[in-house]
Length: 176
Image (cartoon, rainbow, N blue to C red; front, top):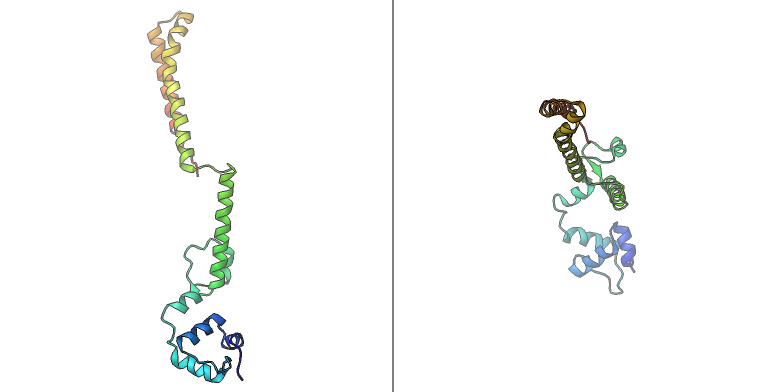
């Protein structure tokens, strides 16, 4: 009397599904009572199974991470890459960060950067246009109050406003 399928799977270090597949494929043969002789099955498994193809188990064993979003994990990494567990941990950290950003966006705590830049640009252009139109609107009224030539006052105000806007245009605003 041999081992049950689950006991043989534990003995072999594989899942019971893998043992069932091996039986269906004819790589191992169970005894008449449905149990498995471990010595015979181990020999049959080794003889009837192909060695793993290059890359399948190697990829599962080591996963290279180029941009590590969790720098605290980088200290304990082996030289060539990360273990599967470490790669999964990094993946979970990235998922958590992504979900946090999505939640903040849904709450209205975050705005799209390109939209914000476009909005600020539109506001600044509106402000600039209002200042450029201001001398034309106000110079005649100011000239009448001060008893000056309207055209001369308009030219002086427009020059002063343009000079001031040029100074403001030299400011470098960073939005990052």
